[in-house]
Length: 121
Image (cartoon, rainbow, N blue to C red; front, side, top):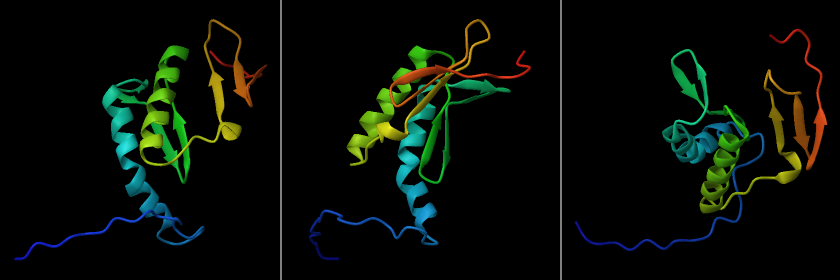
């Protein structure tokens, strides 16, 4: 076997929007972020499993038991996405705080507003 050199190049275009392989390729690409978030063990308990991140297409949902925990998860994701040459679109960022001891609030486009939840116990 001989030695070969590989030339790196900057990717200027992603996968085709709506392409059959696009969701699979994105899932493979973003898998490192999912593993990183899961290793922090920050999240909400669902049964015996600590769950902190869900993905659907190119949307990311983070679950955390406190505002401080969600902020640390957002910071972690921001660093990792920056490393992956991706960014969080702040215009599409939505933060909801649900706590039985306080009012229910959501933050969208930097503005907090109350939300109405029926029959939450």
